[in-house]
Structures are given as structure tokens and as C-alpha cells.
Length: 223
Image (cartoon, rainbow, N blue to C red; front, side, top):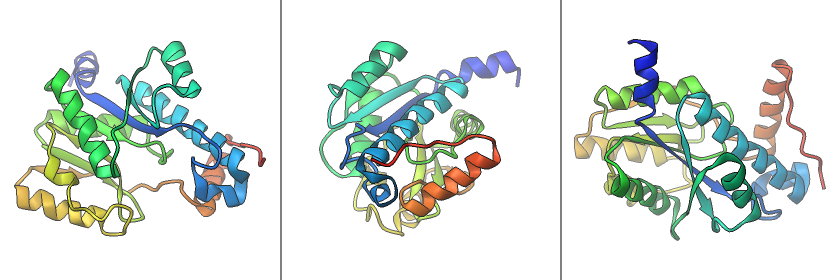
């Protein structure tokens, strides 16, 4: 495909980024044992910024879905400095919040959409572009599994509420239950290679080791 044409087509795929405000004691709480509550919040802030940067590197435009609300100063600063479109996530479990983002975007356009969180810093621009290509080529759903049994990305051509209902969120069966649901619905789907989230101290150390190997390192000081 012509590079210029592909860049144009990729911009027809929306990207929603679900993010918490970087509040000490509420963001990345499982990292607090290693980094302290303020260090964990700073680590989370870094991962939010990285996720937004990755979307832009892919040639797409991020839309930020915020919790607890768009009023937090971090989100206000992003709106001002990055001209980001920001919305507040609905109440409910992660399935309800993901479906609400797909449903709300569908009211504005009929374009495919990718949805990611901010916990997977190894997710890169090439990965996002490949998921977008698959959706544009006809896949109705594309998932990127996570090592813990969940997933770090979902791409859909249209909102599909059944994919987010009666799933054991937070458990090891999330991806397998979702695959069963995809089969039941008869949706054309595909999977990307499995990636991993940064949730626990061991994950953070794994990420820092990878960064060191690349000559980079995130170092939120322990509070």
C-alpha cells in the first residue's frame, strides 16, 4: 500500500485511551510497595504520557477517557498543551467503561476504534498500526492478549456490548472468555502477539531492565 495513502487511512481509525488521574494512593497501588504511593503515582503519570505518545507515533489521534473526571489538573494540562479531546469514564466495571467509550464514539462516527489502557509500555506504534490495518481489512475485532490472562488492547469495527458482559474482569480467564464470546457471536476476529502489563513491583523492574538495555530509564523517586 502507498505510504501516503496508508497514513491517511490510519487516521480514519479512532483511538481511545482509558486513564486514571495520577493520584497518590489511588494510581498503581500495587507498585507502592516498591516506589511508595507518590512514586507509584508518578510512574502512572509517565505511562499515561507514553501511551499518548505511542498513539501519535502511530500516526493516529488519541482521545482520553478519564477517571475520576476530566477536571483533574493533569488532564486539564493535557487538554491545554496537547489539544486532547477528553471525556469522563462512566461508572461501573472495566467492561462497562470500555463499552461506553465504544458506544459514545459510535454516536460521532462509524469508524473503527482501538481502545487501550496505560499499563502496557511495551505496546508500540507498529503494533497499533497493525491492529488498525486488520480492522480496515475486514476484521470485526482484534485483541492483544496479556500475559496475565487479560488483554491490553481491543479494536472493534462497531460497538459490541456482548463482548463486555458477564466477563470475570481481573481474573485469568478474561481473554479465554472473550474468545468464546467472539465465537458465539460469529465475529471475524484475530489476535496480536501477547504483551505484558506493568502492575506489580516485578513488572516495574522488568520494564526498567528493558529500558536500561535501550539506554533509557524511568525513575520516579520513592516518596
